[in-house]
Length: 101
Image (cartoon, rainbow, N blue to C red; front, side, top):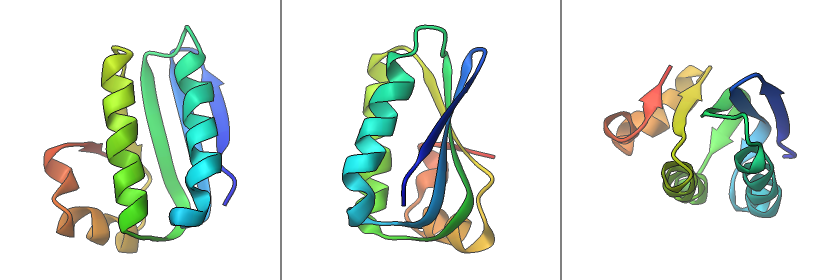
């Protein structure tokens, strides 16, 4: 998986593709740093539309991103989640700590 960064005004999007697992760690971290470095970005969206699978390491990466986004005084939302992804997020109770759209 190689995440794509899209910046549209005050919204920075991390567009994910394929399997979101430990192998994506380095690319995901770099994409996060890129979107957080953009001065105009006030809200970060992680787009799961093309994600077919995520594992516990992906959940950990999302938690770390949440901390970094909060430290940068920005907001975070998980968007376009497929049913399989939404189910994993719900089992992990991520709906209580993330905005999921």
